[in-house]
Image (cartoon, rainbow, N blue to C red; front, side):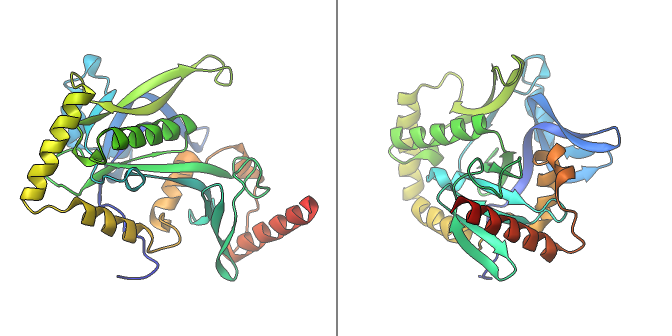
Amino acid sequence: MIKGLAITPPILGRISIGRVIEKNGKRLPEKDDQFTITSQIQGKDGWIKHPLDEQLRSQAPNQKLRSIPVRMIFNDPELNLRAEYSLFDRQTGRPICVGNGQTCQRMTSQGVEQHPCPSPDLCPLGQGGHCKPYARLHVNLGEADEFGTFIFRTTGFNSIRTLAARLNYYHAASGGLLSCLPLQLMLRGKSTTQSYRQPVYYVDLTLRDDVNLQDAVSSAKQIDEQSKAAGFYQEALDYVARQGYGNASFEVGGDDGLDIVEEFYTDESKTEQHQPTHELSHVQDIQKGLQQSVQALN
């Protein structure tokens, strides 16, 4: 295996609750009140919809796609949902610093270094919206490709917190048979003072309609037994996936980075950042700012 290359689940398409629009000459993210399933190909009008989008939308009330039947391909919740605090270079889309609230991997002029990660609110480098929680949920939408996934990306605390809780709860309740449960993504809304009482949409994960937990767990055990009898080794699959994720310091590469920055990290603070002529100068600026902030704290 090539060292330094993160081996992640094969991606067949995207699941989103928004899109990028052009407004006043700028490309800005716009939220939506429904799911959209797209391919990985972009046309002049944005991402091209996947055939599954129309298929599922035709069965939805008012053709508003607000639930999607899914299956997890791993039993370990953390293999299905990848989440960390992430700081991207806005010009190149490459990750500069990725942390979990305790430690982080940071790109410096000397290479990748490990540092403490106090979270964005307490980190001088991450304040001002430069660093955000960034999560990727990998789900399977059909049996045609057992290991192919559709990816839902988000920087929303509501979605990340809810998805992490559900995955861990279902994993525990099923005796670790998360990949055998009939699940669905659900779009929910809530209003807060911060949202000026306007609805904010986030993604939840539940059992499919008309399926209770007892029946789901019983069915999961049967599926697991049948899979083992056929020679399928789920534990080995999880192990290989875990090794693949850990094969690189950063899971997100430059190929997807610019799209991620455009969709999730575009804000007013972007215009206030350094505009370096070379990527290394941007890293050095970050390093100097961090050193000054650490000295001030000491």
